[in-house]
Length: 414
Ligand SMILES: Cc1ncc(COP(=O)(O)O)c(C=O)c1O
Image 1 (tube, rainbow, N blue to C red):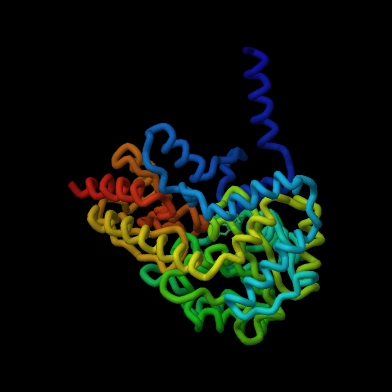
Image 2: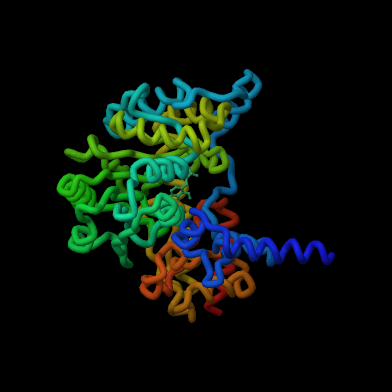
């Protein structure tokens, strides 16, 4: 007993003094306390609250239903056929070919599978490897829209660059083009665009994409896109920035299979772009994971070759789920910002006494039996006040689960 508490005390002591990149990573993610300890992420905290209270977890964005049976079966068959050793460093040729076919079929993009593309451990590794590969010093800046997917700030900090944010404001969550232009300068190394956007559900207007390309050209910046929700856009088909005039030669396009095939645990992603940029990313990536997911790579190739109906049906089914969730939220008294794409609906809880959404979300499991995430989890400390009443709810759950959540939430107004 004595020994255990001594050991625990010692580890806390070391946590405070151990130098290393972990500290700036934690600080970038807003998780480093003043005493040097690391707070758990809000996702971990809220998932624990869901487990403790039995609340419906609309916090973290993962589906509770499997994806297409033919894709799952292809992974089983690949294991049975012995695809259990290291795949090639760039990815198996069949998956590289399938991604290239997919980019041509949906977007008219021509990508050489041999030189202009690599497979990664999810979009997350592609993003982190890209930032580590292309950032060259503390004066480099990465411009992102805010709120942002939480790994961006952590990875930018790990890479040792400065984060410059451009606000997205309700109700449209489109950026102000002057604010965008003001954020990009000759110090900008990367403009990182997530479209469709997590957490706001925005799909960026053509003028926004055009302005990103214009600014990147003007300041010689690289565009990095995160398009993991590419097949989950509800109003208009997704447009990769790389298809815009002048963009392809300076854009790294990142996506993954997790959302498209409801297989978030498989962690098969990819990045494509000009060969020299892809080689730079591969140089770092090969020392992060080297390779991953050999039986899942052929399965994702099967998925990417499914007929158009699969992709349109997946978007329509998710849009319907957002409607069920949105109706419940409206009935409860939230102001709902219906998403144009992605897994999440953002709603304003101010009218329900949720002007401090972080406190509201901490109480919600007990109050309504539902778990959600405050939008402040996706913004830098300096801008939290601007998002303080907003809450993010995941809609990627079974219809019966969403109906149950909607009726629990509706009871809040009673
Ligand atoms: C915007 C965004 N990018 C990347 C990811 C992670 O993708 P992957 O699981 O392929 O690493 C997520 C997952 O939630 C996401 O929302």
